[in-house]
Image 1 (cartoon, rainbow, N blue to C red):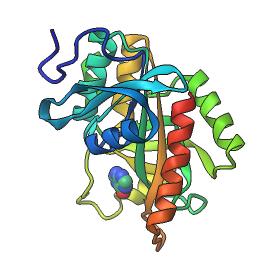
Image 2: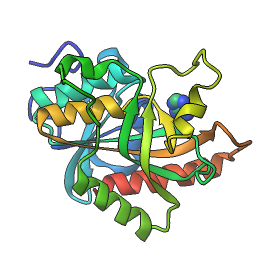
Image 3: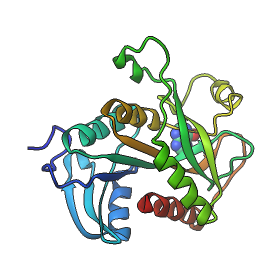
Image 4: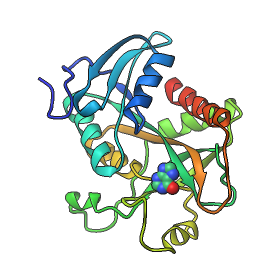
Length: 232
Ligand code: HPA
């Protein structure tokens, strides 16, 4: 069986999938956190693995960069592999003064400048949101771990190198916490499929602050995010 983008057989993928953008990060997560790991996909090097975490079956697969990419992989997981929940774990650029590099940002809503929602022919604007149960649980786990966690709107931008100099300013003045490039498509695919999604981010850089981050700090932020995602 399989799809044009995923070689897995049905049943090889767990009900919960963690989805970093980078496939090598998926490999790293499988190697570091999971036991009994089996690789289920190498098509286009979009590596996917299933293993166990504290005895529970879980999968981790790269989603690539941007909404078209995560749109394909998450659609196939929800519709062709009976996946129930996808948790994106990624990085983002901070927009607000009270967001710092290394903070964890959880996307309570995902704004976008993408045309992805056009396919649904909604007579208005759809607000892409995560599953509330996953959101609540993630926030509680983050607090228990003493993480610096901010919960609010994020922006899934189609453009990384935007031509307009005031592009970020306009999102910043609407209170959007951070910019990434995938969550809105994931949230829309989940909504349309009647499934669950959540996007957890570590702030890797800041668009309004001089922020430099040591390798070790980066790792700490990443591990906190990972533990939250795995325990969901
Ligand atoms: N913009 C978009 N995506 C990102 C950024 C950014 O500044 N930082 C990390 N992912």
